[in-house]
Image (tube, rainbow, N blue to C red; front, side):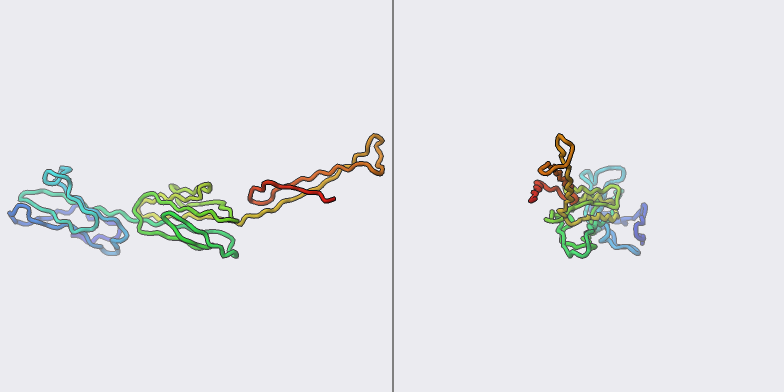
Length: 231
C-alpha cells in the first residue's frame, strides 16, 4: 500500500474490498520490503480481526507468521482490521581476550558456539528478542578472569563461565571473555635466629632456629606446599 523506509510505519490504511457480493470472497494481505529495508532483518506476523473485536467471523483471530500473503475471506459489509507487525532482529557476539602470543583456541558452547583465539569473535545474528547464553569450556592451564558485556541488561558469570545475553529488538551485544595462563610461582623467605643460651654469648654448638615463609604469588591455589631444608 505504501513504501515505508527502514523502521517506518504505514499507520492505518483503509482498503476497499470492492463490490463483490460473494460471501467469503478471498482477498490477500501481506507485505514486501520497502525502501532501504530487508525483511530478513525483522520478524513478521499478520493478525486479522473484526473491527472492535478480538475475533474473526466469530472465531479466533486469523493469523499468519511471516510477511504473507494471508488469505482473508470477506463477506458483504464486513469491516476487518489486519495488523502486520515487524520486530527488528538482534545479534550476539562473543569475543576472546588472552595473551596474543600463545595461539591457544578456546571452545564455547550454547547459542554462540565454536572455537576462537585471542582477538577473534563468534557472531550470531538474526535473533528474535529474548535471552541467549554462551559458555566457555574450562581449559587446563588457563584462568577465566572476567566476562564483560557492553549491555546493561546482559551479564557475565565467571563461576559458571557463562555470558547471558538479553537481546532487545535491533540490539547488538558483545561479551568479552578474558583468560590468563595459570602460573605456579612461590616466594620463599628463610630467616634464622641464634639462640644464645643462658649465658647470652654465641658459643659453638649454640642453636640457630630457622623460619620459612612461603607466599603464593601464582593465580591458582597451591595445595599442598612442602618445603624441605637439605641443610
